[in-house]
Length: 451
Image (cartoon, rainbow, N blue to C red; front, side, top):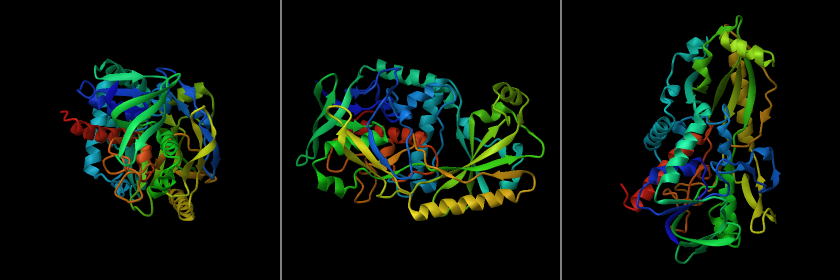
């Protein structure tokens, strides 16, 4: 059977894309490696070099990708708007992406019957936290953590809508191996999937949205014999991650009385007023007890007394060709090669992290209304979830994906997800991934003349 559109992967990027084109005339096939409500590990890594490291246990693959872990209350689902500066080298403008941010928020609210728009609103947080002294140096930036507690409801609603859509067929346990292509025709001819046995899928158009690392691996596997093509467009290169640093903690002379409910769904971030080499800022999290006893923590929250505020430094990781994915010679299935990941952080990036951490620590130490206790300032290079790039989109000649989300050289293969990101920002990418999916959905609807 031939489809108008075949989509590979059923993670957050894919789900928010598909939900925009349900119940239309577009005939869609969705192929997902995993199964509904089942999480399994994937062993597609071989060698990982450099300062960044991966906890392989968390690299899961199932419906909704690694985000399936969010079904457990309190895990994942942090939503932040990127800043205007983050889109400096992106092929989209800030008002355009903000419109899509708002669409995503509305869809989440409709699907969960919960208001999360208010999570982004300033409720005099700095005053309530007795941190007004920081206003001269920082702007308050808020994000939403409500999805941590409402993810299961969101997942169930969106998946139900997609399953019930008459124009969509979902194939679970269907693993994409590679695409078959014709450079002369600038066309993907078919895809090869594994459903217990190899099967060719014929479709007019294809969208690859298997997560950043896996999408890169599949494109590298598809074009492994096309060395010039891979080199021309830096495919698999310019990967970026999210280094973090535990800066220390703020302690007050007296325990701060704060309503726990007010803060548990809002993510609090302090962004320096002066933007320099890269985006960075301080994340704030609250500790209601200085002991590990669960009972003590619950009692402290009930009494609304904060013991201290943990301060973390979130840092943009500048893209660099020395951060790249390559195919291993080893296989993890009969058809699939594993990937090697080379991680790197350049001296300028590293020096800036050290400089800004020292600057922020000094600034916090000099405040009189609280005591700042500095940590060892050791940079954390664990990078389980926030991966970006490798299939960067934009106007640069060496970027492999154009501004219309199409892989260069092909008219009918689109890329979706954080593998498109030309830069990483310092915030979690989830909301931006979802917003980009809505942008791509608009282009697909226009192509098929769908309202």
